[in-house]
Amino acid sequence: MLKKLLRTSAFRLAILYLALFVVSVGVILMVVYRTTAGFLEQEIGETIALEVAGLQDQYRNNGLGGLIDVVRERSALTNNNSIYLVTTPTGVILAGNLSGWPAAVPNASGWTHFKVSEYGGATDRPSTAQAISFTLPGHYRLLVGRDMSEIDQLRDRMVQSLGWILGVTAMLGLGGGLLVGRGAMLRIEAINRTTRQIMAGDLSGRVPRRGDGDEIDRLAGNLNAMLDRIERLMTGMRQVADSVAHDLRTPLTRLRSRIELALIQETEDPEVYRTVLQETIAEADRLLSTFAALLSIAEAESGTRRADFAPVDLVEVVQLAADLYEPVAEEKGQVLRAEARGNPVVMGNGQLLSQVVSNLLDNAIKYTPSGGRITLLLEGSGPGRAARITVADSGPGIPADQRQKVLQRFVRLDSARASPGNGLGLSLVDAVATLHGARLELGDNEPGLRVTLTFPKAAAAKRDGQARAEGAARA
Image 1 (cartoon, rainbow, N blue to C red):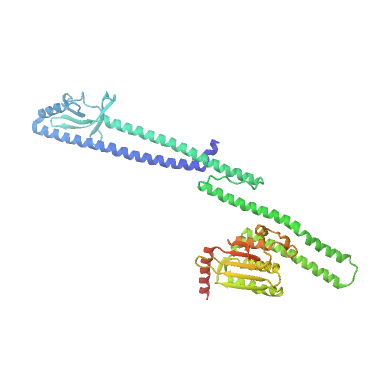
Image 2: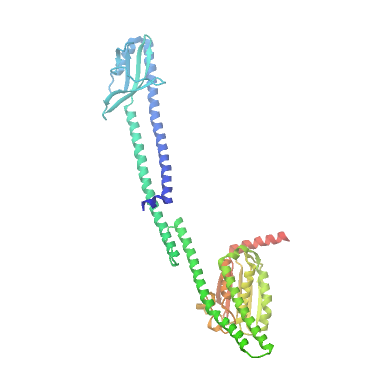
């Protein structure tokens, strides 16, 4: 468990941010430390320099005796953190508050940092000082400095605080990284369990979501949507297999029976065989049309035809379909009226869209009685409007509770079983509508059926303008 947690990307990312944060805090504290300590040391240095200048003036004006008197007077002051010492060339102390000349070696600037006593002050800590020394005329030596115990204590406390802050920050960051990594690992493990469940054949598994909308939640939502789509496709494939096995058995049996009957008939009349062959070809054509419809549905649902999308003039699609089916409607004593309002252009596959309109008209003509009326209406896209194709008839219609069912493959209502067909027409319309992002609606025409195909509003309007611009450029 711990090894998995340490290998999670969330934990590694948390450690990376922890390292950056610790470095940032360390740099900030070091800057604060150097600024504070440096400022204090600079102030002490300036104070010492002023005292040295005053003592040098005293020596020049009043000689060695005057300097010694001033040093003694200042050394006798209580609560004085200044350090003074005047000695002879041989090291004999003439005045000051030190017991002897410090053994520490001055640095390049002449400053000496040394320990005054092992313990001192209320905190019982070693007392240190920083001083500068001069050689006076006659080889007398003068040392002036300040007690540095408080600054040293401040420096030690700041260093300790820096260590504590960095330590606490590291511990909190590590703990936070472990918590974040554990949470991410648990959620990723839930996704892994779901995928293993699906790989085992159970397509009903879904990735749990917390609902907070973070990236893992969005990933889970996308995976669930993908799984829903896969499950629908697999269910559709099973239904297709079952439907093909069931619905194609009858025409294949009929086809075999005709051929077998022709073989066993003892006749030399070629017309008999011609009739059998014609009926066989017609039955084969119906089978081929069924398989072609299944192939078109599969291509539409797979989305492979989306790569062939191009601007499609819906007026041309509707007009061609109306010209093709108007004679068929007249032959059945029906009235087919086609109307186009506007000139909408959408991105899509022209062949599939033509097939959709043809299927809708074919169904309307097939189920509308003689003397009925069929309407094909195209409404153009524009501001606030979407491109819409509507096919309405005055036939028996479809009950409201059956309108979603008829979109499935090979589904035919009891009232339509006597009519020719394979139950794939509306399935193809639904698949092509989904491919184009259009909304398919089946409604009541009172009487009859009204089928409406509405294309996406923004996409239709935008692509309409693009297509018109391209047409103008070509013109």
